Image (cartoon, rainbow, N blue to C red; front, side):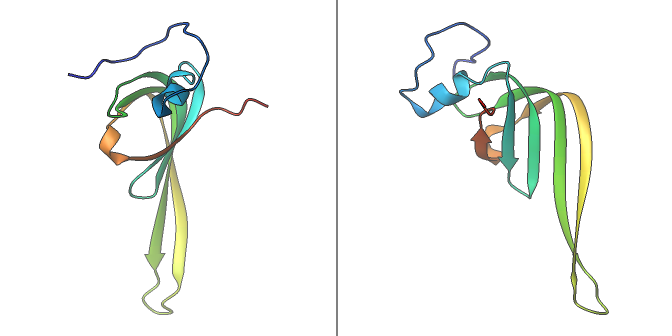
Amino acid sequence: MADVVGPRSDVSTVEQPLDLVRLSLDERIFVKLRGDRELRGVLHAYDGHLNMVLGEVEETITLVDVNEDTNEEIIRTVQRTFDMLFVRGDGVILVSPPSRA
């Protein structure tokens, strides 16, 4: 079983791809998922499969409908919030760390 990584104070260097995720612990991150879903939330924990526990989550789902009369695409978004969310790693496409500006 893969080790779960939680908050800790290690050296802030990036040598491996998951080091960037480790440096984002307890920070607000952006996660793009399959199915036109996007999450923004605080990263509390993750493992080597990119299973993640996020808190204070804002989910945005983009839906594309087609008007049958005009064949026009109608794009709409649905937004939801969650106090805590477990994200399964096999649905993750992209993880973006917080802006350091």
